[in-house]
View 1 (tube, rainbow, N blue to C red):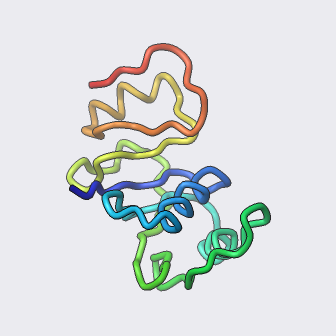
View 2: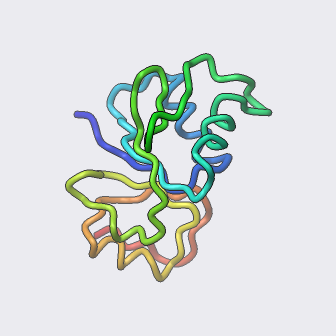
Length: 127
């Protein structure tokens, strides 16, 4: 079963996660949205031309509000309040960084789970 995912924060870790999913041709994880405050053209350029991993051997472009990778559209947004993500759309959301006081609010909002890109402190409520 394919899970729909969003990446919050498209810095080094977020781009690395998407790149590994693309290059690994993972079929059961679908990235449907990316939330970042950066310029869309810059985000596309940084995904395509990575200074550590080299160029991504895929077509990367911006089409409207979407990052397009080999014809697949991924919605770009700049949602800063993560509780606005809908559980009906997303199964997992990756949060960078995860603030300890935010976790209970996000779980109450209906998000299924988290993949944290940084060290979290304290107990992590699992729902």
